[in-house]
Length: 111
Ligand code: 5GP
Image (cartoon, rainbow, N blue to C red; front, top):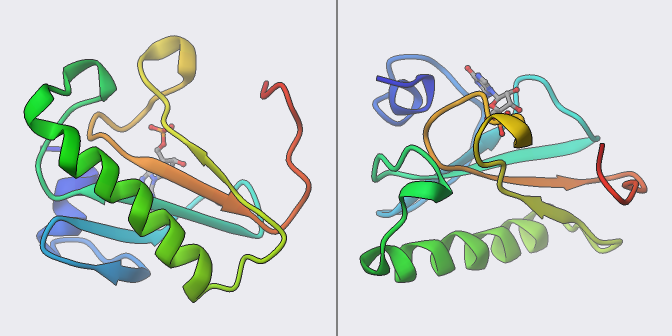
């Protein structure tokens, strides 16, 4: 079981800022920007490499929730969404998640 599943199950605490029947969003414990939110599906999918056609609606939902959170947090100057997949991308938690980063100018290309 991953740490994110434990957050979903309320076994460990997190600063949860959004929840609905399909997903949960909370502040990253090691923020890489003034605003750093992690949006996770409640369905346990290890990474983008395991998604299926049946997950299309859920994946789209995560991005709609990113937009809702951007409004909730008034991220009017922009934000970045990131999905790390696999070792080269630096994925450390094997439960699919969308990072939402904002509050500073973000470099491109990413490191
Ligand atoms: P990844 O590197 O897999 O794309 O992102 C995992 C993210 O989860 C990291 O940014 C890391 O800081 C965050 N994270 C890991 N464990 C916890 C935790 O227990 N609580 C919270 N809020 N974030 C966590």
